[in-house]
Length: 276
Image (cartoon, rainbow, N blue to C red; front, side):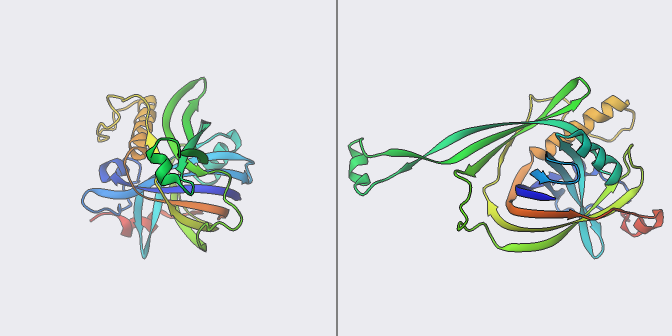
């Protein structure tokens, strides 16, 4: 799969929020009541499911000796084919969504040779459009109903990064993840994404949510919910992850990704991961 660019943003997520998504047999990697979650936002230029946008909401990190794995709370894609593939083949909690994008120019002041003096008399400042602000509105779609998830505000270079512009070092790595135990794939799965890309730290994107919901941050401790209420609870908790505090944002450029076929974990393989 080929991706021109993507954003991987890490957030501090409340452990109690992350545990609502993670199977009880896994031990959450946490400190002081928080774990590392966040989101991955990308546009796929080429994939087995065609061209599509994707937002992966990451609940947190679970312990998998001798390392750790991420757990996705929600995967939003604007492709029925990609949604079906994620549900059936990778065991992901995929949902169909709309990705509405709006680009507005961001002016930056520049100074000429005599800019300092001319600025003081009010005639020396000129504006040059050097960056764009892209607002990505993500709306989940279920049948004829729709629910806003979030708006992600990105600042991008304009024009696109030049060939000789430094886009970070070239790296290759493997990102292990767990998935499954959904209504579409009840098995517990493990898979890895092998990626090769250029990566650099960037300013975190600003995320805003829909209108406040009275139960968005409510506790997820009872199981006495209808199926629709469980869907709403999962959606609201996913929004709370998106609105949590960002601590690091990484931009991936010229990204090539290969998703390995998931392996089914036997029931006894996770016994050592259960909390004491």
